[in-house]
Length: 150
Image 1 (cartoon, one colour):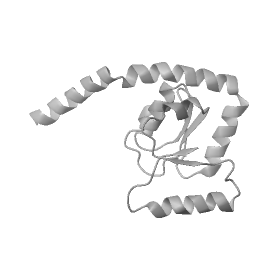
Image 2 (tube, rainbow, N blue to C red):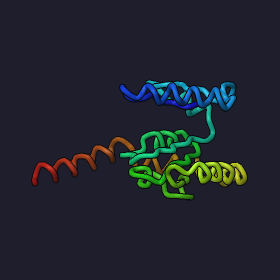
Image 3 (cartoon, rainbow, N blue to C red):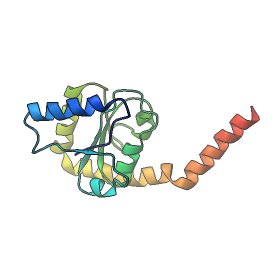
Image 4 (cartoon, rainbow, N blue to C red):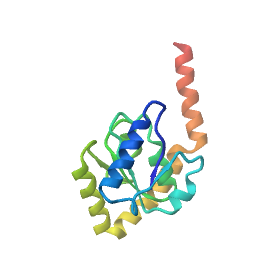
């Protein structure tokens, strides 16, 4: 499943993606789900979550959500994703725009499934500790105080 929608004005991207899926004969294997208000059921139904961001990802919410659901995360080493994921510790990072590196990382995870699942399980506790609402709120207050005092 490919989850998420396009921004207004970028509808062409989804049309092109649908056409690419059709041309490659992947209609029975790839589905475009679109925007989902509550993605929890989708996380429960998957094993590996890919976040192949091409641009500067500001935070990496999808990666954190996946970790909280004990899912394996492979993401681009860009922007906030590098703050969410420590390569090989709580997920895996690949160079942005490298299909070869992404496929290689997926194959590596599948080849050592036991270790991969152990890391995904540990990543849940780390994400819960680092990104829970109390800690996030406290950090936000510190930043706001600094901004307001300057």
